Length: 183
Image 1: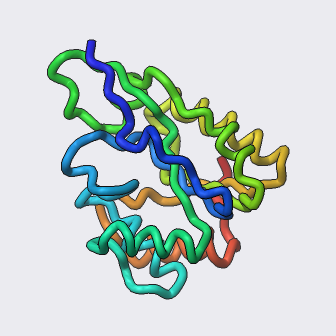
Image 2 (image 1 turned 60 degrees about the horizontal axis):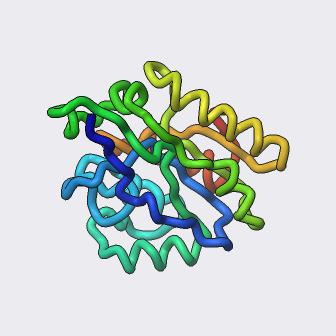
């Protein structure tokens, strides 16, 4: 059975990271883009800059996104490191399929422990419906973050569409910190 490795398996968050945003798995596929949340139907790079009163960076070059990340001390990780799938299933990336196909997970607790300035972790999914394995990993991380007094919340997924309501939820959670969908 084929093993799919996360496209950004070698990514290490900047030690100055204050905000860590978690996705589930980035497929090593041309449609995944050049960095986390780069798929055409993912709007993180539209939502996140607007939170900080910047122009959207959805179509910006990687260097521009990295400059934004450095300015605001934001970085990214995924929950899943590898998937084990059947032959012919390499292109299926629905979250429920990814969840049951997860072979290895990133050690996110070790990642958090290597970020001395970390203040908040945000998981880009509002619910855990259909993803029990991912839920278990994220819940373990949430417990660890709580013990270290690091804020951890869920965000409305940046995938599929942009809306004013979704944008406001991101602003209220990340910038104003007046809401938090608890993990």
